[in-house]
Image (cartoon, rainbow, N blue to C red; front, side):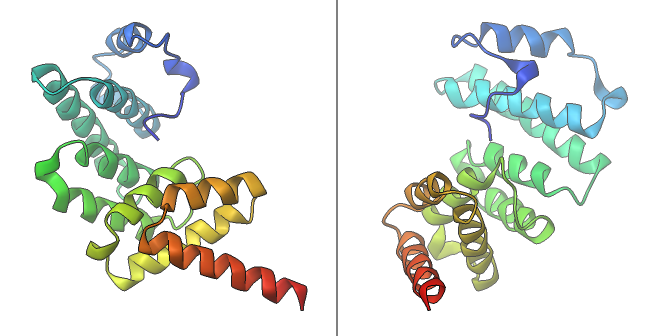
Length: 183
């Protein structure tokens, strides 16, 4: 998600274009739509993810988080915003529980998110042991759904899950589905 290139936040690679785009609309606050707030959260999240530890990264994480939470306050049952909040919270290792709660909420609200699916699969695989059975099942359902789109998406899903327990479970599910299709 944060890595996804948003057309309105096209970046030259050094963060300068993104920083300029974000600063041009710095005062949007209450007048911004939830979508605009979320795009700004994604932008600041990208800056934070690319920054080294320090005050700038902390400021960008805090700004991104505030924008994502503001978007969620305006539109509470929005799975994509919950996924962005989870990703931003995951940038701060002290906020693991918060990231997991937002991750679970993103699946509860929106089981399939095309733009967030690979990040959610990676996060789910990395935190598999901490996930409840319902969230594990949701991760698998999204992986199977994504794999059904194209062979490339199936490979991307498998790569996102890696050789984790989630990745092994996914490989078994895909094999079972292939066998069932041949009957």
